Image (cartoon, rainbow, N blue to C red; front, side):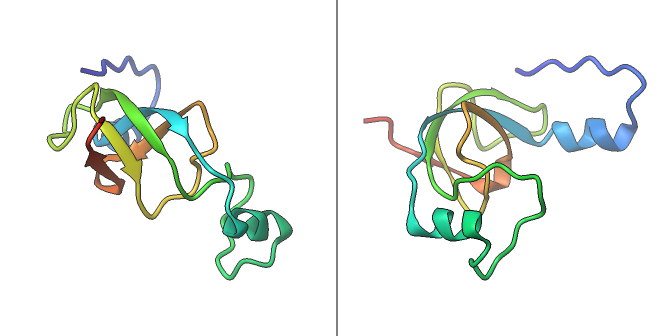
Length: 102
């Protein structure tokens, strides 16, 4: 379980974290769409600054207290997110799909 210590943060910020999942990314490929984002020619333009990457696979390290569909150790793929080019990422639990680790 993820424990959170909050100093002078708003309740909204705390609420947003309780549905998040900390994921250690294992693989995040570079695809043509990723290059198009960098070039600024992809139809979807993310707000800047942003972390690249549309695809990947990772292992759950920790979950927020309201997350019921995943637990630490689960292998997941992010779906419908940008930002998989990272060592660890904080994702909404509803944007992760559990997959087999074998």
